[in-house]
Image (cartoon, rainbow, N blue to C red; front, side, top):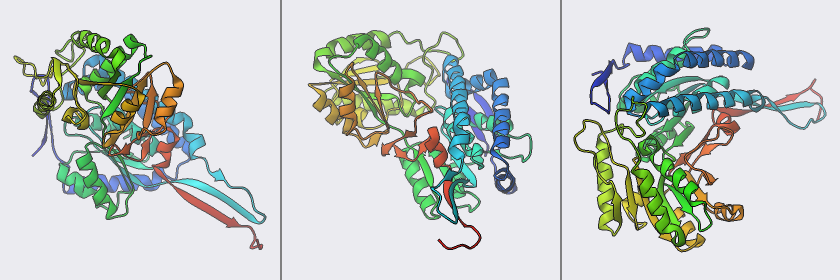
Length: 461
């Protein structure tokens, strides 16, 4: 059966793509391995040039790619263009640090010896990418993997497979070909590929359940993996916060891309002295979202990518209300539309045991609870099995640094949220995953350390 791509705005079929299987799949695996045999021997300068040529393809097709992202997963076209822009920013940063990061590390000389450490490529990197940011989650792996001398098998989500084709086309020309190979396979096939000895590293972004399965299967081969498994990211609004600024950014951090971001703000703790004002301002902002055709330039929130998410979000809202939360806005799917639209939702007085405070929502929900002080905020923020990011809204840097010491997360923000700076490692704690992408550490996870220990002329130490 082919992979059928459905437009989440109107439920129309966008494309039907045949599965890679049998000889077709075998050719792709062999092609990636053969390309690696040639590619990793090329000087870094030549790899940089080839990657830049691939980025030129994306520049030439930028509007087409943005439109396809919108059609496949429902992101407003203005946000899809923003994703394309961020794609280039991340790729260009990784290009800018490649030479220094991948250079041999010279060890302090010893008489009669030359000692150094090389950053050796791994081989074929198997990148399993999700649909919510189909360009960004892929480029985090593809560009540094190629620069380091690896080749890439890219298995994109069945919701956004057209993006995978663009990656393949971008890096198809030149010698060797097959630097990035797009795979169209079922979930069962994708899992079985982990067993293939021609694959040397797994980069997975997705759910905890699937990531755990990937990790277990890779462990049978002692295969290294990078896992980004989502979050339940908290925001704390302290008593001294600039409230207008905090509310505007937290609401955007919760609702951008209809909340379908691993690092979206998914629970908010507000000092009691600012609590009522926070709720009033958040309510006013949430009513301003314009839901509609994501290709319309005026639309500010599109449909959810997955139809089954509507029932899940409604369940979280009902659970919160049953536990004592107040529903101030939204809380249900929109009626009278074929699109997968869920209304921007504001919940107040939400207990920390409610599902909406513990389980990833991936939708436009803003659940809020009051706290008495920093200590209570810290306790509530750390009360989670996830640990991707946390944001603290305050004028007091010392407060942030004090709380950050024991916040079990990958990134701590002050007066910012829902953002990746490519100069910093993107990493998580607890069930949010293992490994890093971006920054120099993104290269380290796509290479291995090779020790070079050379004795000169057979002389004694």
